[in-house]
Image (cartoon, rainbow, N blue to C red; front, side, top):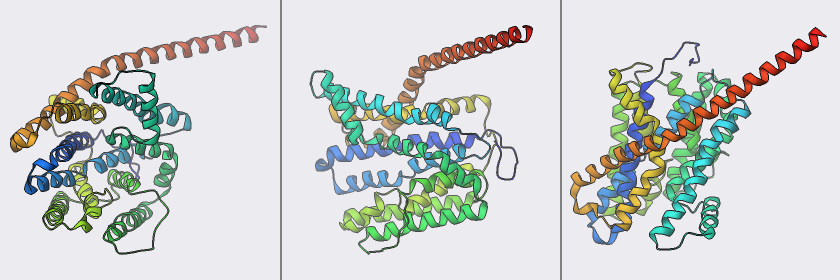
Length: 378
């Protein structure tokens, strides 16, 4: 990899660390959110506030996933022809979306005591197309949209100097975060820019950090993350204890200025040591294992959350904070290991497919060479 100045970049293990921690944070977020939804009528105001505070405080996780993606897929030296886009990137989002949308429909039918039939498949496809499948699949719809427009985002990244990219991020932050936050409080503002949402900001922000266009030292990064997290906690407290609904639009949005600052602070804190291995081989191997399975963990962790919390009616509020933490960590480890096991046949299939394609290409090359030799001989 090369940066904007033509300097080589080594493999950056900090990106793996960011993804792994973000994946764990998403599990914590979903566990707290589902618990609150299921037991809202049985818990105290304090427990409800703590639960939703946990949800809101963990919302930096998805933006950090997008920032790691931006740091990698917008990298200028990488080539991305349309053939590669539709062969590699688009299927990454589309295939899991269709497959797990149907799997989740089957799980719902089984757990509700219904028979599995062709109608199950029809309902699964319908819910995929209408966005009514399990809620966490929204991220795959987002990825699919990003991948389809990726060549244009890469053109912007590659064609922008440092000044223009900073300008783009400022415009995005002001119009897609600050102004939206003000609007959510009921203050009408007519100014806008014609883009779909805040998520592309995170993509370009990750790229800006990876290219050293934006630099924030660790102390400042920690301060930004801590202060923005504190503000979210304060707003959550005031929202629930004083029933101030005005704050809901700020707390529940990935476009919230506080979530943006959280994400930037967290990402820059762990990304500051660019391209440096900070652990022994065993530690890095374990980190890579959790990292390469993180996408699978995101897809399947809700199965366990739904079965354990909803269908088996496990109330984590009765287990206390330690029980909640233990459950989240256990779920993280179990789903990571399970994903690793499920990926073994997929890896084998890919190797076999690659070998077959390589053999076919070699045979075609030999045939062309042989044909040319015969023609020249004549």
